[in-house]
Amino acid sequence: MPDGADVNFWAQAHEQTSLALREGALFPLQTTEKGHVDQGYSFRLLTITAMSEPQLAALIQAFTSADCPFCPPLDPKLTLGETRTGHQVILNKFPVLESHLLVISSQHQDQESYLGVEDFAAATEVLGDEDGLIFFNAGRQAGASQPHRHIQIVKTGRLPLHEWLGKGPYGQPRLPYRHALAPLDAAAFQEGSAGPVLFATYARLLTESGVAHTPVSPGIIQEAPYNLLLTRQWMIIVPRLSAQAAMDIPINALGFAGIILLRDESQEQLVCSQGALSLLAATCFAPSP
Ligand SMILES: [Zn+2]
Image (cartoon, rainbow, N blue to C red; front, side, top):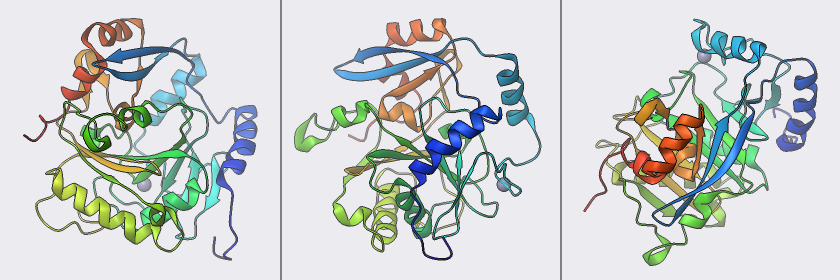
């Protein structure tokens, strides 16, 4: 905020959601949820049930329009305000999880450009004291649906990733895909230190995971697609090979937190028969030896 006042974005999201629903500006996807376990790792499978005509029309419009939905002017019914860094905070127009916020750059910046100190400062400011998941789909091959830089934040509820991370030696899970992960301490979420601490960790993990071979500089176009996941305890980078698993199942960062959105029951059956972890691995590189 330019005047330095703190905003509770979650309280605002709660209010704005009711308003946007009443005004027909928000289109939550209705899903059924099923638990699934593959190789000892638990998942939440969310399968879309019926979609209304207006919802379908809004989705088609959003994904086929030539206009960038995150460039000004933003829809005031979905807008929550501005962070101290000048990022805009808006509601996800098609949420699957409750309270799904987007932190977007005020000017158009490429989704495939590296994040910087200010992006991390903005995301942690929005998260505030909540226990949530901050995630970033870096490029279409990593599951991004829009080209304007946007970081996503959800309140976690039950996040399978929390359970996965306790497994294996030193609390590090043996995941069947290449990834780099770092534990975080309190400084990573303190105002002032959050931006620099998280950016330094991000740059290191991009190099360790094989995404970056040259120094990571904010705003420079990335060398390869990846997903970023950030909780209060960990940061994880997963380099990506493709955006979709079998049967066109789209996999974005949420998948690597154990939450997979499925279009219909046939996709759900496929995940249950092949195993969610195997499907994720098929969109990634083999783990480093
Ligand atoms: Zn834009």
